[in-house]
Length: 123
Image (tube, rainbow, N blue to C red):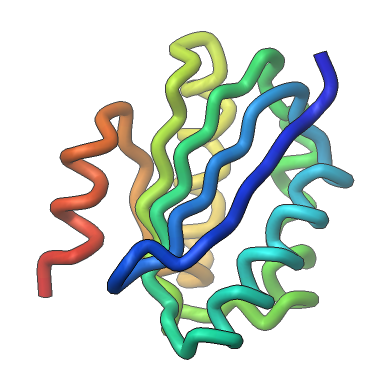
């Protein structure tokens, strides 16, 4: 299928859409754009809405520790990530647990966009 993404300011948060085959390379391109938009607008609340056609390989997920460090994604970012493909949830949940246990992210995984948006905007 390939891969498509969009990243734009949506009021008080940055909304991210990604669709297609996930890999470390697509994640790097996506986080480069997310951090660019966040820095441009001084807005570090991120709502990610992903529709994976294939789950990201576990070893690519483990590399996210370095990926987030490379793009200076710290706990100042509040990240609500929605995975719409039920078959990919397991791998994304692994990534969430891996990053959270290391204290690297202020984020949560969701399966519902409205629930994610509510959590993201709740102070």
